[in-house]
Image (cartoon, rainbow, N blue to C red; front, side, top):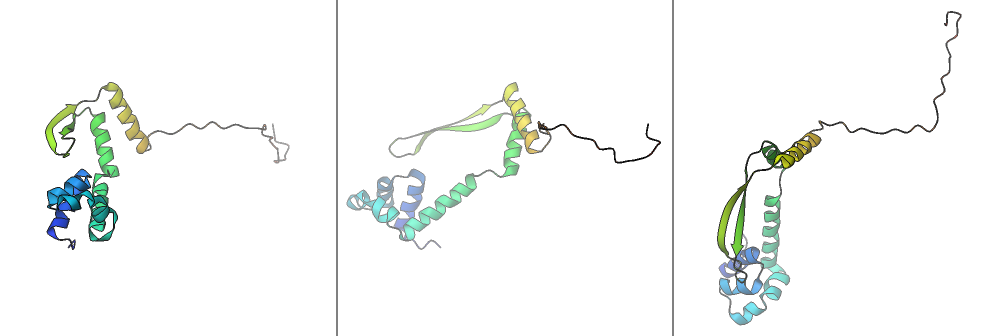
Amino acid sequence: MSGLNPRQQAFADEYIITGNAYQSALKAGYKENYAKNAQEKLVEKGGKVSEYIKNKLKEVQIERHLTMEEALAITASIAKGEPQSFVVRQRDPDTKEIIAEEINEYSAGFKERNQALEHFYKINAAFIDKQQVEISEAPTFVDDISGDDDG
């Protein structure tokens, strides 16, 4: 799979979560002297650990992106006035571990709902943009139809 030994795997997984090489190395079981240089030795140097971290971070980034369908569903939900849930997490500044977690809800007001509707309609081309056209010369009409019956 990853080709990492258990200690390297533990370090990399913890580093991805916290971004702190020193603390991650200690948690993974490395000695303090080694942990002091973990950023250079394990993250920056390259090799299997560095590649694993880069690949996992890339996967996490892709998972965080919204698809167009997801974005439209959220916009529609706001426009309908459905409550939106969000999580507030408090983390320990040293270990970055979650200390407290609170789930809250917010319902959009009239203004936000209206903006969501406008956004939804714009994306679905429901509005036609007005364009102002300026004419620099007056058009000239040429009568190229000859005949006596012309009024």
